[in-house]
Length: 487
Image (cartoon, rainbow, N blue to C red; front, side):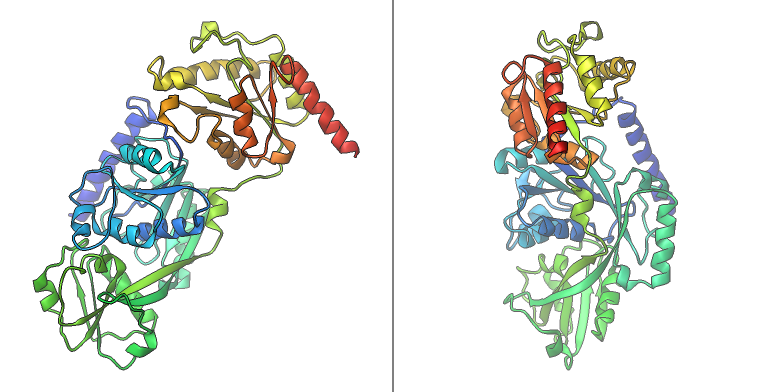
């Protein structure tokens, strides 16, 4: 039965993906940097734990928000998840657990993730959005798609998609690798690498704290050695919790598993042997706050250790490449206002000679352009893509390569993180192309172009003020480079 359901689920996902890939359904560009943490097998892989770890790694360096559907919660949202008695019923156990652990990072519950992102941007000015469980969501543009694979049972249970879908991932994280045999983890890595060239990272699950759920007091593992212990949980893969406890030297007299995301009631708690001290997961613990128990219940808090620096893989930052980031309209081509038709593509006389000089000197050429006409409804994203292709084809015919194009489709009143003078378009280019900002330049015809570049320490040239045209700007860049090389 599970195999049949997996086939149906996978087929539905494939059809949905086809519609978005072929442009039959619109994929919306988000107002910030979007990271998805998901899986291809349902339940228990550790994606929510990864989201928590990622937020902690960011450590307040960037304004971040978590977006989750709030599985089994009543709230449709978008709304900020709260904590306390009854919160799990409203927002879902995973959302409440994240809200407890990630203060002050807002955790937004929204059945519609796009609405959740826009809510977080408007209310909290977040620039990075971490999506809990969104690998199969194709409605939006995502900057990083990360897939979590369980080392203990990677391909068992309900499969949302086949292994070939890993080709879409930007990174694979093998969770709980220390709970599996080393040879099995290495075999799993080989399997994954047969489907993708993305980095494959392993993570170990470690015991962090044991907390009394009534008093929030920390309990030492040593103090439990002479006590009779039991454990219970309502998670996707309960055996992994049992194995984790055993690996940490915790001997159990009884283990009880409930269904995934189980809603606990008094009768469940009454069944617990009050002669034993009971251990449960942090996710289960958030649903027990309003229930009285004759037995002692402790929450097992965990943390992960990763084989590589996750943040450097997600945000590689600067590299060794030198680049010139170019505005489009009014800089490369004549701008009569919201230019979109191919027949209206008219380059300035200086554009091709200037870009050729820069390209021949080894500069990557990258376009960063505000295109609020999309948000205003004047034209579509697809029309912009066609216009950009006509532009790049024309330049390519003259031996000029445009390495990347970044656009912001939002209106000014949407207050996104990508509309210049905001810096997101530049940040993405720096990460994607390994740009050394100290060797790079930005050329634009509006003050917002150079202001955005300045925020990431890229030198800016404002046409019409600093220099008359693109050719003069290119000559200045090349002369500056020559001067620096002789110092």
